[in-house]
Length: 255
Image (tube, rainbow, N blue to C red; front, top):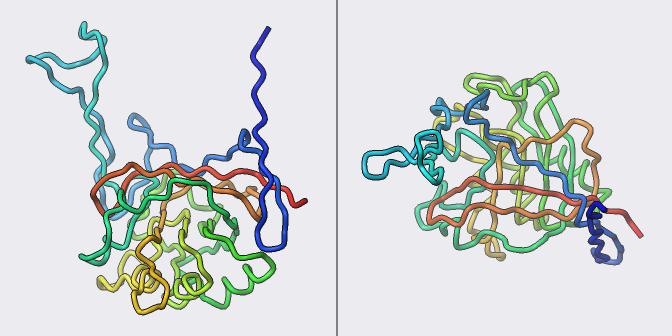
């Protein structure tokens, strides 16, 4: 007889609302990094590659008679795939991502505000879209138009970005973790201002933003339903400003 998959359902509350999530039915929003196929490319990054580790002059490859396979991965964290970053990405005194990476399920809102062209998504646009929903710890925002190919070279491409006011709005609303399919919350060419990043992590608020993260380069299906989810953000624990990350959301029903 075959093995039946377990159903892992949890009931939880958000304010005065009750929800149920099935933890056996996750939706992976991570962009698959094909080392031998097409890849997304950002900020003129070289493609991610993998080469065999050498041991006593011999590559650790099964086809070369090695008893094990051992590869050395070369990747540009911000340029090749889904990644999560801390404020150390733009401030020298920010924490390493590995020291603040979330380790639990969190409440999350998934929204679609897709545009064609280099349009700044404003605070008013976000406020209008988020107003019907209760406040959550994380926001997943799909911004890319369906005309953008699955594995684009984002260099020079006219795509949306977040205004500084929009990121300030998210921080003031209590969003601790912002996630998007964009290669960056800022435009590719902004003279190094990175205004949206700085606004999200601004340290002049009463609440400490050092635990907050931004995740970019998600893969979000156009038909992914909007609404409330649970989310798991699982980056590698590195003493760097960012790390490759896996993101899974869990379907939720209101009770």
